[in-house]
Amino acid sequence: MRDTYQEQLDELASGLADMCDDVARAMERATRALLEADLQLAEQVISEDIKIDDVRAAAEHRAFGLLALQAPVATDLRVVVAAIHGAGDIERMGDLALHVAQAARRRHPQSVLPDEVKSYFAEMGRVGVQLAEKAGRVIRTRDLQAAGELEADDDAVDDIHQHMFTVLMDRNWHHGVSAAVDAALLARFYERYADHAVAVARRIVYVVTGQMPGPLAV
Image 1: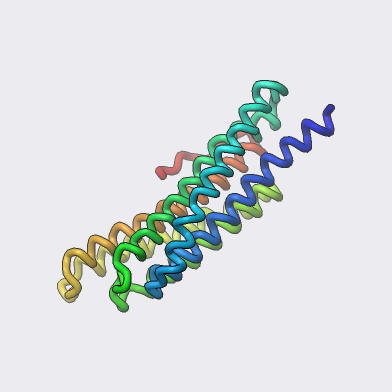
Image 2: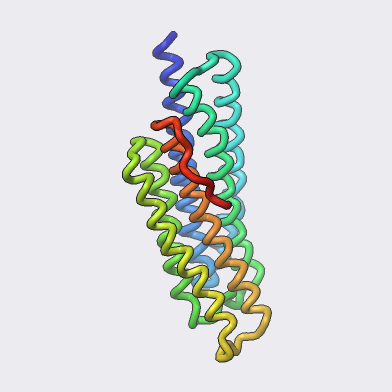
């Protein structure tokens, strides 16, 4: 009975780690669709988002089942609680990748972004994907050092997000209001995606230590 219970806990964590891999792929594809005005790739991200939603629902169902039937305590209880909240964070990451893909589809065949800012979004996409992949590894290994590294990695996205306002408000910006609004919203999507990845890592710190790191606005 105990072995079965532990297997269920392991499956719960494994499912969340796999979700991180899914949203990493979604953001990687969404970013390419955005930068290359690739409609087919954007449509792929949009159509596959429902799969991430389904995995989140399955993870929550499994977690609530464990609460009801196994009455977990101590670390096991923290695993289940962290899984419930973490599934929400990861699903939101998938939704943000979806928003990026939808922007690419909406403006197709034109590019959403002027060439001069594409490098910023390429970098935010690269770091965001790495954050999601690292969050998955943290779930699998419970590596507190790696969890802490996500905070520093997230700073790179925050810095670019802040810099985008300087670029968009510069008097030399000549791409109009619509392009500026698109760029500002998209930068916010990437910034929030990264924040949710950090939130997932913080929940693993809670699982291991019993203490939740300071609040993170997402």
